[in-house]
Length: 314
Image 1 (cartoon, helix red, strand yellow):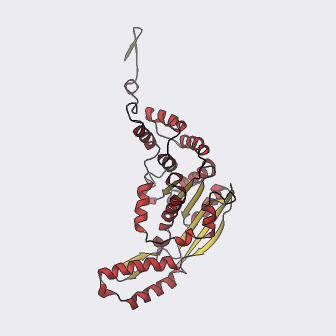
Image 2 (cartoon, one colour; image 1 turned 135 degrees about the vertical axis):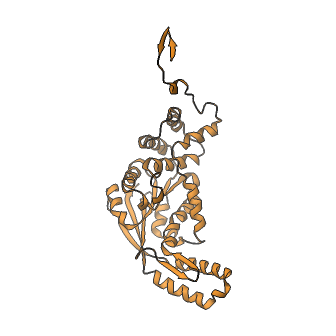
């Protein structure tokens, strides 16, 4: 209750006692707290996990592919904006057994690709110009459209030299009112932010097929309309290609690439040699070579990758 001009007026307690939670924060901490409301997702941590699981040298064939080189060259205004890489084992996950070592060809070939691409783009263009997302079917509850878009936006902002005032002006009322950010809010911020960034921007979305279908469709529509000239790299399994085509309202031209034997051989060599160090009596050079030759020759025919390019000229 509040007494005004001798009259009692009902005022909700939550409004009467509400204060600005950022009023006493130092500037850097204030910005950090503002950005936290964009998304609870933590892609950089997931990226570190993926980097730790790949072996040195994996994915070089992709970085050396002419289509990838053209897409990653931001100065090339004739390059296609979106590059999609679809891959799937020919008969489910192929488990290769030799002694105590088990290797998944799908894990070897698909999972490291995005982490390799991300590191390559960061090295070329700077961390502040690259945002990424690792989709995971086990986390579909948290991986909503608003959280994914907020996660991408947060990465672009948190690594920047400064956060534009137009963004803090939009975020402060949300924080003060305790209101959740919505897709419309993030779309508005992106449209305000991206035109101010004269430098190149890249997004990487790993395992897009692991999102819930409606989430995937809404995300693709947002990527198409809200991210301007940002270059986008996507990986996923082939069954989502028609959905991607439909969401982007274009037919993607697919290029079929067989598994890289160098990646397979390099990874298996690494695994076998680690096993030999632990159990030297279980393996010799002759057996090692027989395993490498047999698996490399058979695995190459079981796995196909598809590159697709979204023919949206910049």
